[in-house]
Image 1 (cartoon, one colour):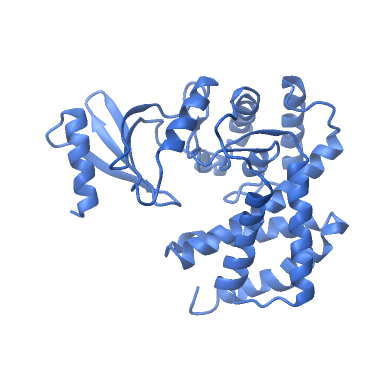
Image 2 (image 1 turned 90 degrees about the horizontal axis):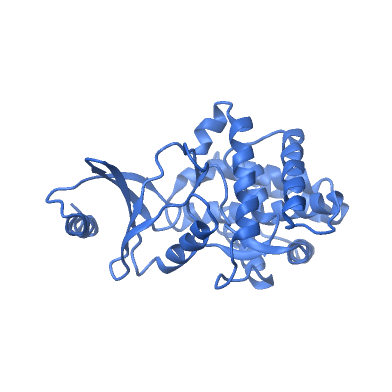
Amino acid sequence: MPERLNQLHAWVSQTLALPAPEILAVTNDASFRRYFRVSLAEGSLIVMDAPPERENCLPFIHVAQKLSDSGLNVPKIIEADLAQGFLLLTDLGSDLYLPALQNGQAESLYPDALRALVVMQACTSTEGVPLYDHALLHTEMNLFRDWLLGMHLNLELTAVEVSALAASFELLSQSALNQPQVFVHRDYHSRNLMITPHNNPGILDFQDAVCGAVTYDLVSLLRDCYIRWTPEQVAQWVRSYYLLALQSGILKGVEEQQFTRWFDLMGIQRHLKVSGIFARLYRRDGKSGYLQDIPLTLEYIIQVSSAYPELRDLYDLVKHKVLPAYQQSLQGPGA
């Protein structure tokens, strides 16, 4: 048994006073975190393994308390060993949103997710969480340029393309900064939401929360990188959220057309970032499973930017250069 796993078993055994705890891997995170389920006579618990040289548990603890204070359904922290990077958490179960959505349960699940999002934005304090500022927005978009275009596809951009891409990045960041700034989960999507019998959904993976654009989590949910809906269905859900946000006071004096534009441009920013992250997960961390999700992120960028003349250069670059190069890369030995 690897040394790290030995340490985890010893910690769980001591913490729960169990001589030989039954511990099973649940899933690997896109980061360096791992999760394990501990079986007990009265149920189960979750152990988070976050190596301290790679991950910091304090943001998770800090944000979990904020979300819990807002009445949202998040894991409760039972024990923590920050020196070793272990957290013992309550177990929200195994029923992810994604498989249920794929099986036709969207109409019953998305209303709960939208209501929880409004609660999160209206009630959760942003005190002590980082700002989703100009620098961070650009750092994220640069992942597209550096990791997808550069490291993964070896694409060389012309001087004109470099300038046009920078202008697109600036337009997208300004749109995000002009929006109402609220608590942002930052990964509010079908792989981080759990179906729970009470206070649905259970919410996971919130440790990277920031104070940022009001549309960011809505885009994560409705233009999900792992499942796709028709534009008509997305528009219906966006309108449902918009009305809830008006009623809750999150949006004040914002016209629906303006909100839709914010939503669209925020989605492009997110999908530029995520396509770069997926490429980095493969090239840097050896996680090839995310490569299959890159085409959808690029298709979202193409679909949405086609409606905005000011993003024509970005549309042309992704549609005519990046997506074909990515499709070609799937045929090569490096994919």
